Length: 253
Image (tube, rainbow, N blue to C red; front, side, top):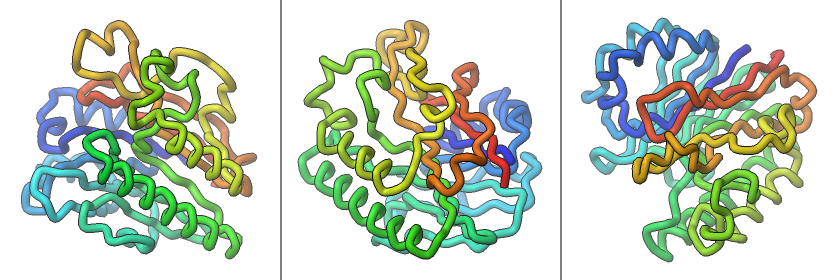
């Protein structure tokens, strides 16, 4: 099965791109999780029904034009919004099927203020506690989305210059360490090792994408009881339309 995650930075805007339908169909995926849809249900473009998926699930933020996640699926599952926090920002979709739990998450950004950084870290901590409960039930878990943190120096172009920037703070990176210790692998590193200069987000400023000055902040984390089923993990940096590009995995389920 193929799973793709993509922060589209506005569903209405990206759906107007000429290549949007052909790009999504080229993924040939069983699951597509998108983040930052920035739209409520009545604003969803009709074109999303032409993408060929059996079902569409969405979790929109209460605040207009903000956050939100959407999942496109070609398999049956039980879907919920966040079960571990107040999700009025529309950050989580949880899909359960067989003994697997699949998360599509737009994790908080902590750059705007100390309060938002605190919110981000509480979200991280609450989620990890929830994951540990699921692991104790022998669930197989896949987490995808925009995590808004680069884990290691290899995961961004200028690590030294960003040591005091949210998205690369020690406390944020330490959370990913804790996630891995709890029983997860970073699928991209698991498959590709320490390959360099592979990113999933680039600023719109200063031709950053053309110069490949970027950050790898979009992930598929897979529980260790599933990692031997991973066949491939990849970054589709040839796909445009957002300041993020899609990332994905092939996994034998």
